[in-house]
Length: 245
Image 1: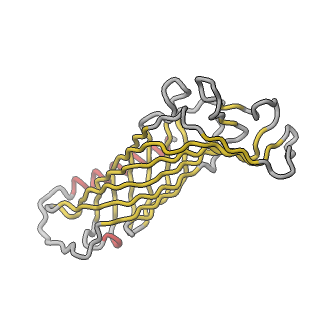
Image 2: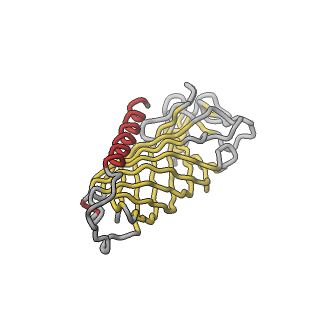
Image 3: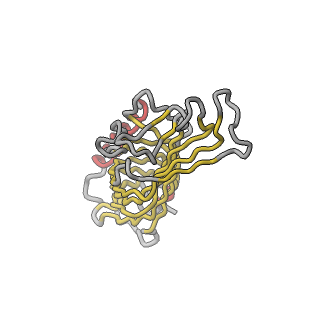
């Protein structure tokens, strides 16, 4: 967590430095006639949760996949900078080690059980919680070469607002206490319910890279769970971005 936050703040500092160095009246007349204003942005990477108690065992394979359509509007008096906004879908897949997230529970608190409900020993070999949001990202961007953004150093700071579309769990291959499959056909269970999850997401974003490739950082400032339903979990992520297509 400390390493991720260090990278986030380092990126923010880098972007702030670029803004300060270029906050002067421009002398060059840039030709932006061939610059596309429509961009696709694809993101893939690792997800983590901060604020989790010891009873929640998140695995290292947790990951996200995001896809956005963005409009990029350069500043007339400073084309190296632009504001971008768009619409897209984000999905987060959090994997657990011998945890069962009971989204269909009638309890006021979201249960993170160590074993499958109704038993004291069975658990899923693979178990994940997936949340899907529709999101509106907004970014302040910097390009070292505004005439050809695909051959340019890029940096961006932003924020994104989202609303939840779906939340579900999926468990594969129920095992007994000896680690043997309970069912021969690799039993799969899927449960869907949004009642425990905060329907609105607000997250801070930072990106840096060259050409169409970059890295991104995201930190959710709104709690993942609704108030009174569990710990104040705040997701964060790091990953690769392909943008400017």
